[in-house]
Image 1 (cartoon, rainbow, N blue to C red):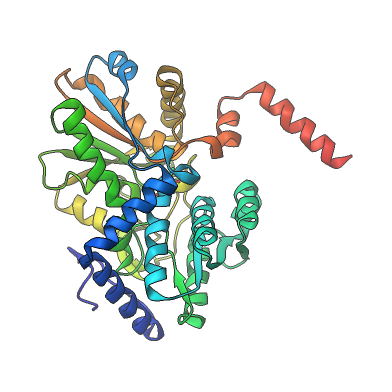
Image 2: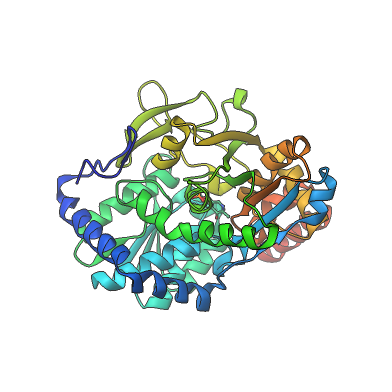
Length: 408
Ligand SMILES: *Cc1c(COP(=O)(O)O)cnc(C)c1O
């Protein structure tokens, strides 16, 4: 099994001996589900009735005009239940948990989006649910903690290490080792040990399948380029997978934070700061120092600041099949403002990285060219950050009033 799940030199399953049988069980169930045509059909029906799929491919005609005529289409993953593509992965894994006959799910979460999605899935399927979240993230992402708890999940603040996402992942693995018979670990992105990169990409491939058929029907041709933001890499893998065998350029936008020279970013593939290592059960590019200690990352988008990246994307970069670029916080906020104003679309700060990279390249394209931008989610969750970035005085007053109300 350890020879499977490699993509060039990347990937693998570096797991403790005690979890080997659990991973083998998962691989067996995943393989059986994939081989069963009824499984994918059940999955599509569930996503249709519960999460509004297929999501539309929206022509962004005002942006096209603004940038000189190239045809811009936006894949609307923001319209999923819970507001992002994360629903595709958690609902798929939920069906798998049902097939395995387990009753409990656990997950890691950073910004809290994957935690909310997993807690939602657990409520729907009737599973017990525990979410591991760094103590620092629990404090700064209170709205998502609030929803997870309303959805019936137990949120465990992790006090180890930097008390953020990577520590939450370690803690979730610790839980799994003790409770493997009853429990499935719903990993949130196309990272981690095999089969997670493959499995998460498989469920997210619904984005690319739909987008390819939609662009052919609506634009009458394949796109020249497809853009997606890259945190762990699941929404990018999802849309890219629809176009892997086509002559379509695949462009991933990473978090450039304060700029690649600042050292304060989360660009593992586009910067020179990433290096190949093994951590958290798999081999990929990590932001680590010379001793293999993980570095602090920064992005205006909480969902993009992970230290590792999908081994499948690392592979696609190494073979030249996909290209990765970094976009700064400042460029992202400007792209978000423009998209809201021009199209009435409100992409999440994560998704706005894909928009920002496309905006840099659109002026060089011609009106014959078609591009697709994956809008991985919506920005409702980002209102605190966005209002700060826009320096909105009315919002500041609102928060001041609230604070006063609570301190009285
Ligand atoms: C979590 C999240 C991401 C980053 O995750 P990937 O696995 O890289 O897709 C991107 N966009 C949104 C809206 C998210 O919630």
